[in-house]
Length: 82
Image 1 (cartoon, rainbow, N blue to C red):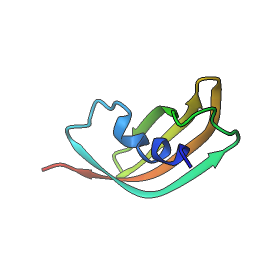
Image 2 (cartoon, helix red, strand yellow):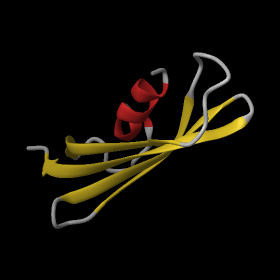
Image 3 (spheres, helix red, strand yellow):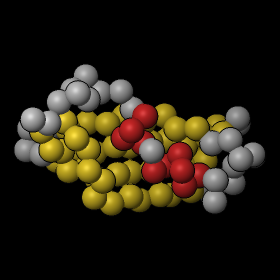
């Protein structure tokens, strides 16, 4: 399934202002596909957020040339660097 790599890389391709201060450890991944991609090219619009308590979340909308084909959600364990 071509949507899986786009869903897996959500927290790695999203931009975070604290990226140099925290490591992201994936705890789990939920992939929900509601449409068949038109081609093998699937992109992801991703937002990652984290709290001071060490818990984070990455949420991705999976898209192809025509629009949304699914969502990917990752729960994250945040570990301070240094």
